View 1 (cartoon, rainbow, N blue to C red):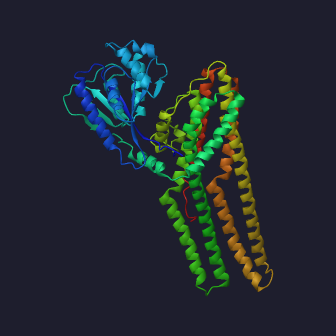
View 2 (view 1 turned 30 degrees about the horizontal axis):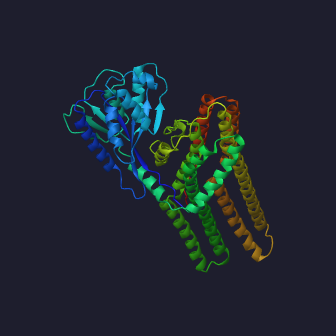
View 3 (view 1 turned 90 degrees about the vertical axis):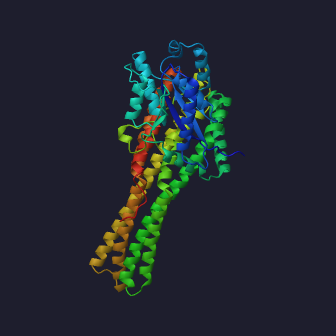
Length: 528
């Protein structure tokens, strides 16, 4: 059985430059040397292939020259960003054979994106230039250094790259000097190394493919009932589901380690309090309880240290974020919805950034993912039915169950904590009135000391696991998805449903991001 393919490390190369170039062979040689330097900037990766992606509007001149040089590299690919509708854009091409070259490069592009309409051509070109800078890891500028006054020109885009700290290689279009490198924020080596660590994780791949096969069978059943194409479904399942379940299994692994470690730390701390209380009341002369107390505290410290060193918490929330994006990818691909690297709103900026490794990993995966053809005409209703049942209904049910489960656990721990505090009160009152004999007089203070410590530990577990907040969040999420489902059911064609599918993906992304804000600061810590 073939294993799950590692997600390639993707370095996105943006392009800006002049449409009219002199001595293109020499410039091509200079660009090739720049690409060598870009590859050298990447850290050494053990399990992860490195791929170059060129993001370009495919204008004449610099855009196409850099695109051709990148595409000569094994495993590289092209992402086209069109500022205008294709035929309108082609009206600007002047060189002989330019139209045919544009069509050939556009056909070879792995993804093609048409940017939203702009008030003017100049605005459209400026927007395309900024988009390239915003979505690349490093920008190559073929520029003569002259600050022309035209909107959206090379000088303006170079300045925008400098303002945003985008790494920049400046290849002198007049060949008056060697290419220069302005590092800006630098190539994100940490993200590439984190992706390599993810690819190196060991997972039972038999279990991965069993889960993927089971889910594919369930999706095929839904597809048959909806009249959806099984051939299109099989291809997408083969590409997406193994990646999803591999990531899901890893997320669950580190979630269990993190949650169990946190509960164990609280239990050990409570045990240390109990041992200290029992020694003081019953065995003041014995040294063994003190050793046991020290061992319990030492074990708690070791768990905290190991959790931080192995990054259980960070891996859990990062892998869960990536898994949820893989889950959505299956349905976004069917709708051929456009996906860009997400940029969180200000209130979620503590959750993730566009520079995080999970974002780069997903965009690398997405750029390679097949896009089944659009379902038009009579096939639209089958696509809508399939997406609603297999994705939206599935998520609604998940959040309903999650809300109920967390609510029950929160209530159970709250009742136990209240019972322990009641027991503490009873023990304190019993001790005050001198209830029982001499032995009971010692037991009651022990209960009065240990019970509140145990109640505090249970309250800490409730806080650590955020049962109440997660219950309320999932309930709200289920209601939001119900509203989206009702709007999707009213859609009559692809142009109406695609924005709703993208909205659903954004809702799920932001829900996960909000959850990350809640839990990212809940590292395993000693209750001190």
